Length: 124
Image 1 (tube, rainbow, N blue to C red):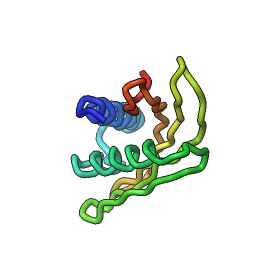
Image 2 (tube, rainbow, N blue to C red):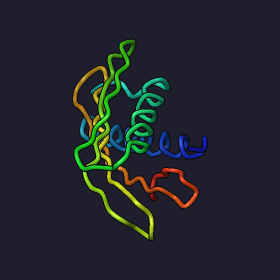
Image 3 (cartoon, rainbow, N blue to C red):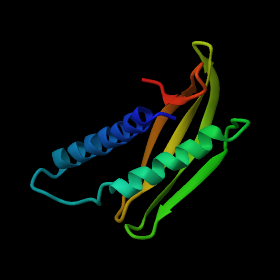
């Protein structure tokens, strides 16, 4: 997988975390820390989990890969929830369950597709 694919995945996760933080700040506008975001190492571990899951054959609903970072106490999993075809590409919808140092946990769903060049990329 090319580095820009990793960057795109990290950007998607960052956007989800930021949107979640923005929603929280609207609920509690004067502060209130509901938990830490993901560290750069956490982001790397999430991406590697997704990469292992994407490369496993065959893609099956329910297949899962776990990750954890003992330093930040963050952990989670990536699980295939749907396998399908889109635009002639094999795709699967992946639920990324992320638990940071403090609750609540968060779930993000991203569609990954296998391109004609053999790379798994996030479908925009």
